[in-house]
Length: 221
Image (cartoon, rainbow, N blue to C red; front, side, top):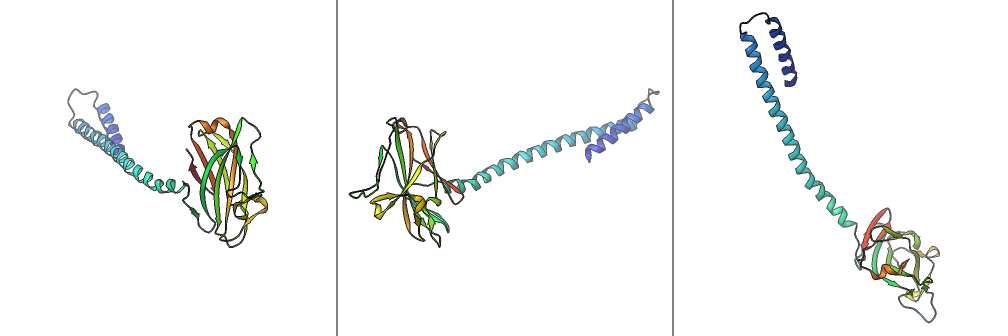
């Protein structure tokens, strides 16, 4: 509104000056208008500076609040070894360990058991073991609770195959033919074949676990 007043007064000043251009005498009305315009322009400049300063202050105050709001969510999306993560009404997940090995065997192998041995000597296996306790009211396929992705050096991705222990950990069987009944627990192995060099260096390895629409990150190293 004040900007409009400045424009109107400027127009009046121009009109007054034009009307008096033929006279050499000083016009008091013109001088008064000039003073009013100068005062309004000064006030307008001060108002703009104040609004700018207020906007920057509000931005600074809102940024910490935004970060504080996001922090709990980020913390909730991590998962650690031997610390159960509960997905309400769906499952409880516990990573019991992860390791590199050329041969993967059940936790308590019997006299006869299934095992997985890498065929390419340039590669090795990275085995992530997750216990899945069903919180559902009916049985569900053990391969339908969790999917896993292994990320090496923050960019190389590997998709594991899965197997599940049976008979108390004495053998392996297929996840696609094995259900986990309500409130029961299955021990699943997510086995990714990776280059052997991955096991030897110190570059980061993360395991991305997807469960019921959410993602959780386990940092191996």
